[in-house]
Image (cartoon, rainbow, N blue to C red; front, side, top):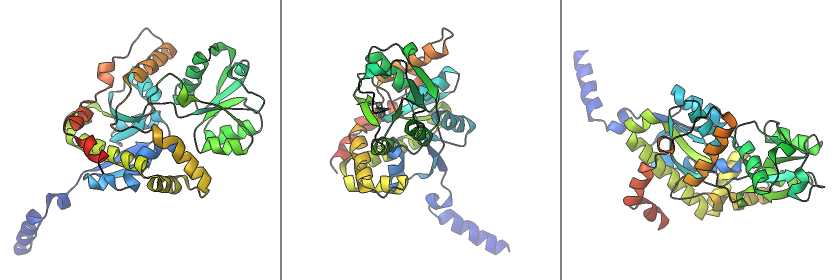
Length: 325
């Protein structure tokens, strides 16, 4: 018995450390909209394994739940939007943003066919997923840029995209915000794509990567490898349409080629490498959050945003290296 234990111990010590034990990480994304492709691509294009990360990619609906998962320790990385993340930070969540791949509002304002101009939104009902998130921020930013007082419309929580699509088809809502592929389905129903909110002057960090501050401090190398895998996947997605469409086909369970290609063509140019978060957009969102929640408090951007790992990768030439491939 002792001899067998001794042989097992020797065999165990001779094994590569990567085979003995490898920490497993959990990465979350918030839904099925096409802008989540930056996370899907990490799994589907194999970059997690390429950079030595043993990780699960899971859907956790909504930024708020993703952040709860981070704080509870069941998640290690979560793709979040600026409005939801800053709301959580305002309320005391000890998380930090380490990078991001999209700094534009990815939604379009979709209306009933008779609404042909933003000014016609006055007095109308506009549906959003819920209050305090990216949907509401997009609506408020649009109204502000169009010179329409927020008080002149009724913004109401109307649930997910499928629910709002039904509400639009029955005219229970006058307008809402959708992103592809929902915008393509809305157009098929005869609804009007009034404006693409990505064309607003206001930046909005839609895709940001959040981690617990303690995790960044104790696992900086893991965060670095994550951002390498993330950036490599986004670069491949942007540069190779065939790969990008395949990611959407798998994740959206969609067979219509025109819908898949339309979704890809809309999003691919909006993803960014290096994965930097727009500070201007983050500050604009912080103003939205503090005005909404009140209390005279403010958000310290220095504590919210830490792009030192992205800076390190840039100094090392990593982004130039993947751009050459």
